[in-house]
Image (tube, rainbow, N blue to C red; front, side, top):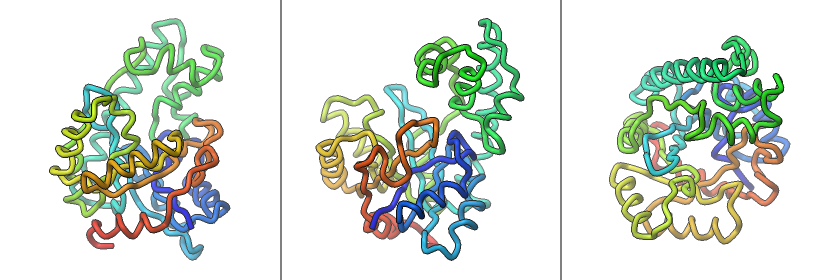
Length: 282
């Protein structure tokens, strides 16, 4: 049986409601699904309610964007229970930073001849927190760019005219808060670190493992078989557990499905038990 330990709903920057993700996971025959919306757990209650009595384990989580100059570093945090807690409390502050960032992006686009009202972005996002994919979708709907890819390549991507950073935790802080909250931190899609030298990757993984990192996302939708095997071997060599997930975002990532990614993704359910052994209170 298979699981998916990385997915996003409309609560952050996905296009589907949390309940729909549960439906998709059941259709795929998954035994577990982790809801890991960016910097929020707003969708966990609905997803958990939808999964109750179905045989699908709904794993509460989040995905943190961490401060890292060389590339993108994201941390998937699993078994993070909603409510008070060291990391849970910080998520509210991170969400405030997201809203300020979004307002600045809208102003830049408007000043650049692409008028957008913040209310249009919130309408696109529904009840969830607003992310750049929602802004990109509005840009497409208003005819400012031909598609989502162009919105990021020309305006919203890192280093582009409308890119605006936001407050982030540093890697050690994010990992420490996750562990203090009884959760399991996993380094997401390691290729985005922008590290090409083996010695540099070794230094980074040693640093993160010493901080409390538990897993490394080796089974990822965009990876070929040899990459998945390579990252799994890398994880084991540094005392980390190979994890995996689709990184599903609905229509914001065309052709990518819950559980199966682009068609060949299989994350074994044994991964859940191995990671769960590091969670507190489960």
